[in-house]
Image 1 (cartoon, rainbow, N blue to C red):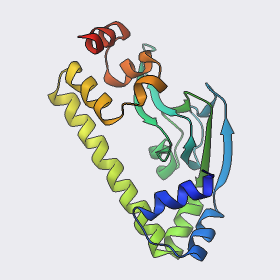
Image 2 (tube, rainbow, N blue to C red; image 1 turned 90 degrees about the vertical axis):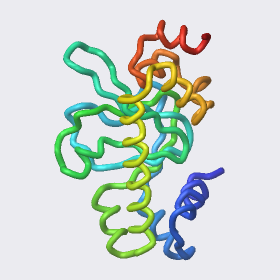
Image 3 (tube, rainbow, N blue to C red; image 1 turned 135 degrees about the vertical axis):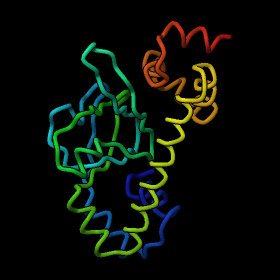
Length: 190
């Protein structure tokens, strides 16, 4: 499926736009291709865009002072990724976004998103609901970390996103769950 159609179907789940409105909306996106391992956002960068994944898989992550990686998000097709604190507050990036696989994305600048939200109620509705859904997902993940053991978090993740287990290296799934690769192996096979 081509990028425009993928985005149109995605938007239609949350908002109604006429063909003319959608074409105007789509005209503000730029299609980019990245290779496996390629960085999209690096800590310290100025961040001006958010990225809608057409194909492939991205990860958003943080590396602490002890060089331990913490995965904040995997972004598969029809998911969005960026350093949202840096994007919205116009600060330097504190997280990284890179490609787990080759990926195609559509990017939109913060200024264009705001312009579109002001011009088209349906676009504002879409971005508001998308943000709300992202907030709810982040809250659920945080609650799961506070309330569930690693085995339960692993089962929960693989039940919700079974394709991740074949798409993402196990070391990255372990970093997302906050466990070692060895612990993940024991959890998955127990």
